[in-house]
Image 1: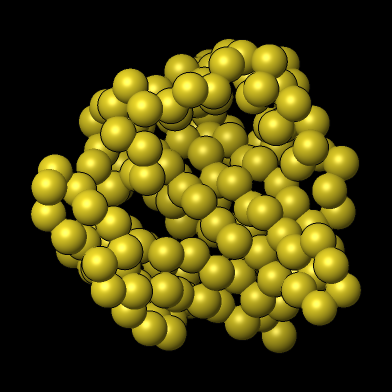
Image 2: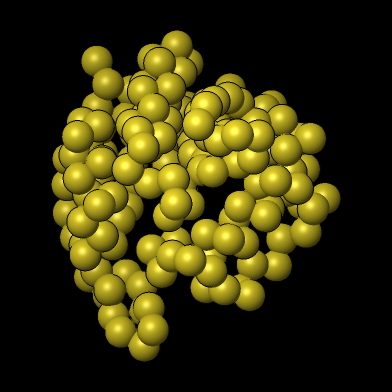
Length: 168
Protein backbone atom coordinates (compact mmCIF):
# COMPACT_ATOMS: atom_id res chain seq x y z
CA UNK A 1 0.00 0.00 0.00
CA UNK A 2 1.33 3.41 -0.99
CA UNK A 3 0.74 6.28 1.46
CA UNK A 4 1.08 9.83 0.17
CA UNK A 5 1.07 12.92 2.39
CA UNK A 6 0.13 16.15 0.66
CA UNK A 7 -1.47 19.54 1.09
CA UNK A 8 -5.19 19.35 0.42
CA UNK A 9 -6.70 21.43 -2.39
CA UNK A 10 -10.33 22.44 -3.07
CA UNK A 11 -10.77 19.45 -5.39
CA UNK A 12 -10.30 17.21 -2.32
CA UNK A 13 -13.41 18.62 -0.60
CA UNK A 14 -15.65 15.63 -1.35
CA UNK A 15 -13.04 13.12 -0.16
CA UNK A 16 -12.35 15.15 2.99
CA UNK A 17 -16.05 15.43 3.83
CA UNK A 18 -16.52 11.65 3.34
CA UNK A 19 -13.48 11.01 5.55
CA UNK A 20 -14.81 13.28 8.29
CA UNK A 21 -18.20 11.55 8.22
CA UNK A 22 -16.51 8.14 8.50
CA UNK A 23 -14.38 9.35 11.41
CA UNK A 24 -17.50 10.69 13.15
CA UNK A 25 -19.06 7.24 12.84
CA UNK A 26 -16.15 5.06 13.86
CA UNK A 27 -14.47 7.10 16.60
CA UNK A 28 -15.77 8.57 19.83
CA UNK A 29 -12.46 10.47 20.09
CA UNK A 30 -13.43 13.06 17.47
CA UNK A 31 -15.43 16.11 18.53
CA UNK A 32 -18.57 15.51 16.48
CA UNK A 33 -20.99 12.66 16.98
CA UNK A 34 -22.43 10.73 14.02
CA UNK A 35 -25.01 12.80 12.11
CA UNK A 36 -23.96 15.97 13.95
CA UNK A 37 -21.75 17.32 11.14
CA UNK A 38 -23.76 19.87 9.18
CA UNK A 39 -21.00 20.88 6.78
CA UNK A 40 -21.84 20.77 3.09
CA UNK A 41 -19.51 20.31 0.14
CA UNK A 42 -19.32 24.03 -0.66
CA UNK A 43 -18.44 24.83 2.96
CA UNK A 44 -15.57 22.32 2.84
CA UNK A 45 -14.32 23.85 -0.42
CA UNK A 46 -14.36 27.27 1.25
CA UNK A 47 -12.62 25.91 4.34
CA UNK A 48 -9.83 24.38 2.24
CA UNK A 49 -9.47 27.69 0.37
CA UNK A 50 -9.27 29.63 3.66
CA UNK A 51 -6.52 27.32 4.91
CA UNK A 52 -4.62 27.81 1.64
CA UNK A 53 -4.82 31.62 1.94
CA UNK A 54 -3.68 31.73 5.56
CA UNK A 55 0.08 31.93 6.03
CA UNK A 56 -0.13 30.16 9.39
CA UNK A 57 -2.53 27.34 8.49
CA UNK A 58 -2.42 24.16 6.43
CA UNK A 59 -4.53 21.07 5.72
CA UNK A 60 -2.52 17.91 5.12
CA UNK A 61 -4.10 14.75 3.77
CA UNK A 62 -2.85 11.17 4.00
CA UNK A 63 -3.85 9.29 0.89
CA UNK A 64 -3.77 5.49 0.78
CA UNK A 65 -4.23 3.86 -2.61
CA UNK A 66 -6.04 6.87 -4.04
CA UNK A 67 -8.40 7.84 -1.20
CA UNK A 68 -8.04 9.85 2.00
CA UNK A 69 -7.18 7.70 5.01
CA UNK A 70 -6.47 10.58 7.37
CA UNK A 71 -5.94 14.31 7.69
CA UNK A 72 -4.35 16.95 9.85
CA UNK A 73 -5.66 20.49 10.11
CA UNK A 74 -3.34 23.13 11.46
CA UNK A 75 -4.96 26.48 12.24
CA UNK A 76 -2.52 29.23 13.08
CA UNK A 77 -3.05 32.38 15.07
CA UNK A 78 -4.33 35.36 13.12
CA UNK A 79 -3.03 38.32 15.12
CA UNK A 80 0.48 39.45 15.98
CA UNK A 81 0.41 38.11 19.53
CA UNK A 82 -0.53 34.54 18.61
CA UNK A 83 0.67 34.24 15.00
CA UNK A 84 3.47 31.93 16.22
CA UNK A 85 0.97 29.32 17.51
CA UNK A 86 -1.08 26.69 15.70
CA UNK A 87 -3.85 24.38 16.90
CA UNK A 88 -3.91 20.85 15.49
CA UNK A 89 -6.71 18.39 14.76
CA UNK A 90 -5.84 14.95 13.42
CA UNK A 91 -8.00 12.03 12.33
CA UNK A 92 -6.99 8.68 10.85
CA UNK A 93 -9.38 5.90 9.90
CA UNK A 94 -9.07 2.85 12.17
CA UNK A 95 -8.02 0.51 9.38
CA UNK A 96 -5.01 2.73 8.65
CA UNK A 97 -3.87 3.31 12.24
CA UNK A 98 -0.55 1.83 13.32
CA UNK A 99 0.93 2.19 9.82
CA UNK A 100 3.03 5.29 10.49
CA UNK A 101 0.56 7.80 9.01
CA UNK A 102 0.28 9.80 12.23
CA UNK A 103 4.04 10.01 12.65
CA UNK A 104 4.36 11.03 9.01
CA UNK A 105 1.78 13.77 9.41
CA UNK A 106 3.61 15.15 12.45
CA UNK A 107 6.95 15.11 10.58
CA UNK A 108 5.31 17.05 7.73
CA UNK A 109 3.84 19.44 10.28
CA UNK A 110 7.21 20.12 11.92
CA UNK A 111 8.86 20.89 8.57
CA UNK A 112 6.01 23.17 7.52
CA UNK A 113 5.81 24.93 10.92
CA UNK A 114 9.52 25.70 11.06
CA UNK A 115 9.32 27.21 7.57
CA UNK A 116 6.28 29.33 8.42
CA UNK A 117 7.22 31.01 11.66
CA UNK A 118 5.27 28.66 13.94
CA UNK A 119 7.07 27.96 17.22
CA UNK A 120 4.21 26.59 19.36
CA UNK A 121 1.94 23.69 18.39
CA UNK A 122 -1.14 22.90 20.48
CA UNK A 123 -3.77 20.18 20.66
CA UNK A 124 -6.19 18.60 23.07
CA UNK A 125 -6.85 14.90 23.58
CA UNK A 126 -9.21 12.87 25.72
CA UNK A 127 -7.26 11.59 28.71
CA UNK A 128 -8.23 7.96 28.01
CA UNK A 129 -7.15 8.02 24.34
CA UNK A 130 -3.96 6.05 24.96
CA UNK A 131 -3.09 5.48 21.31
CA UNK A 132 -3.23 9.21 20.50
CA UNK A 133 -1.33 10.11 23.68
CA UNK A 134 1.45 7.74 22.67
CA UNK A 135 1.64 9.29 19.19
CA UNK A 136 1.64 12.85 20.50
CA UNK A 137 4.26 12.11 23.16
CA UNK A 138 6.44 10.32 20.59
CA UNK A 139 6.06 13.39 18.36
CA UNK A 140 7.42 15.66 21.10
CA UNK A 141 4.23 16.99 22.72
CA UNK A 142 3.97 17.44 26.47
CA UNK A 143 0.92 17.67 28.72
CA UNK A 144 0.41 21.20 30.00
CA UNK A 145 -2.75 20.63 31.97
CA UNK A 146 -6.10 18.91 32.27
CA UNK A 147 -9.41 20.37 31.14
CA UNK A 148 -11.86 18.75 33.54
CA UNK A 149 -15.32 17.89 32.24
CA UNK A 150 -14.22 19.15 28.84
CA UNK A 151 -16.64 16.95 26.92
CA UNK A 152 -19.65 14.74 27.44
CA UNK A 153 -19.39 11.52 25.47
CA UNK A 154 -22.13 8.89 25.60
CA UNK A 155 -23.54 10.58 28.68
CA UNK A 156 -20.22 10.49 30.56
CA UNK A 157 -17.95 13.39 31.45
CA UNK A 158 -14.56 13.21 29.76
CA UNK A 159 -11.44 15.14 30.72
CA UNK A 160 -8.97 16.32 28.11
CA UNK A 161 -5.26 16.95 28.28
CA UNK A 162 -4.05 20.17 26.77
CA UNK A 163 -0.72 19.43 25.06
CA UNK A 164 1.89 21.52 23.34
CA UNK A 165 5.17 21.27 21.54
CA UNK A 166 7.66 24.11 21.39
CA UNK A 167 9.76 24.25 18.23
CA UNK A 168 13.21 25.83 18.46
